[in-house]
Image (cartoon, rainbow, N blue to C red; front, top):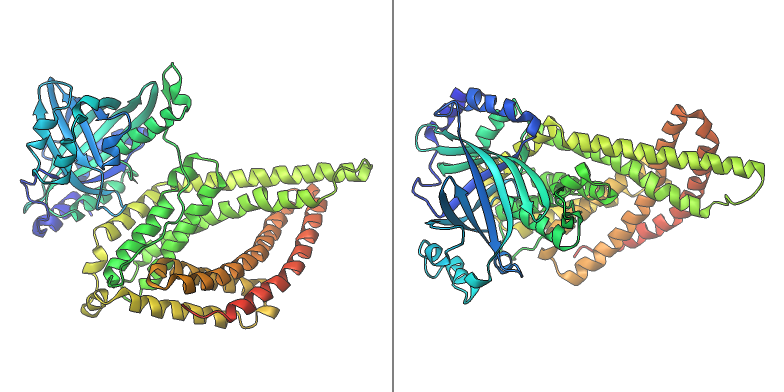
Length: 561
């Protein structure tokens, strides 16, 4: 779709943000590689037809303020003073965002022009409704005297004005610079599409047009979020406390699944939005850890998050069909993460556990040779894990991944799935979620019981199908758990979890055998060690199978909550 098509599409867009809405900020944040800046500038001119081909350029120095104990942050506010030219502007924003984790930030924003670099809280309060929570927080006694600078943002900003017809106006900015917190530095190269008037879908459409020429990544954290993260690293004694200038990045933390809590009267539509947001936050919250970290748990949790997301989309597919292209791309991403996870489990868990059970301390020549071969096998497995981890990181850094995440954000964040639903589906969206949840869990429960009927004589492939059925049931129960009585649910989940653990142990052995076979194909000298490992794995599997059958029998006696 070219720029003219984009302009035509939005000629009939309903205006969701009035042009005079000064207290609401709706923007889409994206990240750009510094090496792609020139391509980005060209794409803006050719794809989006801005008012002027050359942007306005300015230098911005912004200082964020808070108390030493971060009172404003804890109260959900961000306070900054920005200098542009010889003029100061102070701004307060709410931290809460209704963009549902898809890069779309929709929050309160108030600003006032002031005469110095120090915040003037009285001037800000005049711009806010007196009874509004931000005004009450800024009126806290003694707050102004306790404010201190906490970090700075210094950028060179390029700005374009985009105006499709019929009331849609977008301000596009490119910021190049850095975050500064003491001696710590973090580079900034990000793009913002800010909606001045019109529908939020226009922001995604504009970004997707540019995506044809340059990869733009979803920016899930704002500058203030990154600044506070940099401050936390400095406070906890990271390398940012060095007296010399240090370039660093914010810590890539592992993000685990969080509970999804529902009121009893929640609708299918509300449930879909909450579950998909939860799964997305789980999966993509580990993006930085996979790309820049070394913790195997980052890959594990991102893979689980993507599986949960795919499972959730499957649960709702009778009402909300997932676009075929999107489903295919999520499978691609899951496969890339799965290969890395399998390799890391072999190198970091399976083989070390066997090492602990091996007698490698003998002084005989044959045992010394075996020990050398074993060490070589461990090194090969470690290198393989590093290789697959690097491939996963490259997948996340690819234009394909950028298109996937932006396309997913556009479909989910702007609720495009609603407009494509038929009349019957739209009616179903307003029905109680608990009815859909009950039916879905019952179907998955029956599917698992049917799939596992011949588990005692199952082949590895058949056991794998049982394992997948158990995972899908578990993901569904986790999503809907707050709708069911807690004690009954915990008993059921406990038995299901033990079954999953037993299936997982056998699956790990099966995957390990496949990967070890690949090692031998490339390095024949590893054959003796691999054969030894396979024999140990086979013995462990033989011991694990009776436990699997015990867990299966216990699960079959479990009653749905």
